[in-house]
Amino acid sequence: MTSFRMAEMTWPDYHEALAQDPVILVPVGATEQHGPHLPLSVDVILPTAVCEGVAARGGYLVAPPLAYGYKSMPRSGGGQHFPGTTSLDAASLVAQVKDLTREFVRHGARGIAFIVGHTENLWHVSEGCDLAYRENARLAEGLRILNVGYWQFLPAETASAIFGTTQIDWDMEHAGIMETSMMLHLRPDLVHMERLVEHAPSRVPGYELWPYDIDAVPSDGVLNTAGAATAEKGKQFLDAYVRSLAAALGDAFK
Image (cartoon, rainbow, N blue to C red; front, side, top):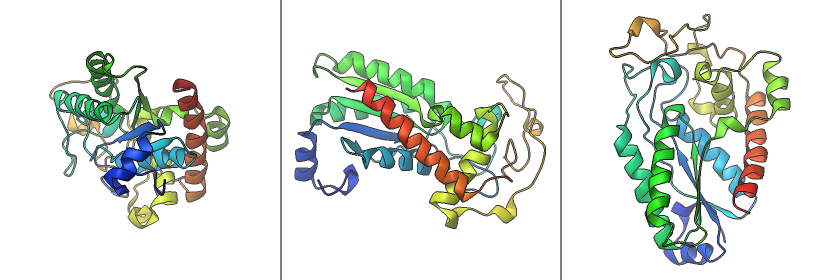
């Protein structure tokens, strides 16, 4: 197999690769504001890079990513009011997960893992996985479907080395140190650190409210400062995610 990227394969090559019973990894991202210093595609670029790092170890194929996700929420993504944030209704995301699972099963896949890069996607992807399993388990003996946010696999030693004793609030890390560092490592050409505005962490309420208060969200869309981000930290994050997620997938699909 010359590539682990499904989109780069011919159909005969893909058919041959499936005969090896690989797990298909599906990055699930979003098109969403990430402050004035990062592109709208952060939540697509990062889980795709993690998936490709895992797939390079063998036994996996990486499907084209889902580039749109569930609606951005103020306390974890800044909110829908930012230009460029382009979101799906929950039913649309659930339907995409169901449809993709059906198609992969039709191709002959028995292991499918949705690797999420956007917090708001998680429960809706889970619903899609649950419905898809119900509909396809009888058609595919041994079918397994997994859903996970890649950031959940940061080893304690890596977190300690980068964040020290500070408790990580992943909601507040939107466009923060982790995402900015990984982008500096992977796509420095898309990062504009000179545009970053240093400010204290935001105090967005811990609940969802409609209509939400735009004034509760920092005007730059960054919930916590990313001033300490570096490309070196980004490599640490990526390497750690690949190692720990590969181990978890190995356990789930053994």
